[in-house]
Length: 417
Image (cartoon, rainbow, N blue to C red):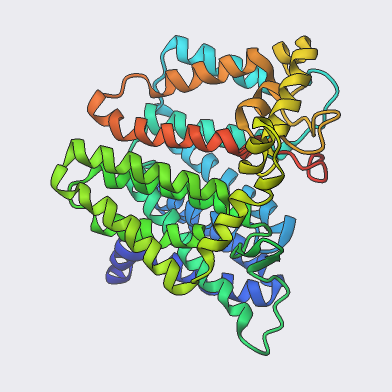
């Protein structure tokens, strides 16, 4: 019995990940297994150490949409269970300054206020709360549970394993309904177990940012480089233009960071880039043509600078301009916001695909300033040496938010959740 207990203490998370992969494969084939997969995740989170439990939550992020809306609801329930457990065990170790407590409390109060006519979206409120809560705990009270190094590894592992499991679709006779490839006029886009390649691309972007942190934080980083390559390949096959921009930006940041930390190994960054390109070209020779066509399609029809920008950003630039125009014409909403969880902006056909504009529309200047101050107080107190890799990754994530709504994206069909 003692040997079994010691085995689970040492290798418990590996056993849980293997079980989750098996259950996920079954869930992919038999959707009813969803009601076994996520209860198992909840039990694993409850009985695992805090750091292992959080890593399991991150590992399952690429799996959380394996069975439409029900799997998202069950996954969020597992996340809530983890934080209830964590908070009950770590309550006494939480030490916040008075200004931090006031600013963060004000933001959360402002976040739940129903300012103006809008849809109560529980999903976006819970998402934002969880993200800020993770940051708050990670940088204020319990760095052991929320170690970026370990978290990045398991998120990358989740992306890789979910991509492999999604290939079961192509085995004859299984009759799986969800196809991991979205066939479009601009190319075949990989989405793994998610319903949309852009969602999968965003998960890959976040994983690459955290993996980039590991590469910048360690002199010996070969394992992290391999993880970066594999996740980069998964993201590249989504044919997301935003992903390609973020990937290139990350490689530049990592190269500069490695030049500062370990100049001799900086060439490894170039090798990573060339290796990713080489593998992609071997696996799918026409992918460069597809990417080029997605970037410059209809460029000949562009008649001014605005239309050129619109072609480059696949229609995002016109959405940004329409959103900015709406906000300037409605100063009250610009200042106070329409309320967190608001749907699409009136007279704008889609979300702006820009987290900064989305936050201005939903929580206004007041809420955006409170959010910024909350983040400043969360990261305050870290040493400069510890903050260098974090700042590099934050810059990448900030760039990512420029072309993605992230948690501020609200689909009107999901706004009543």
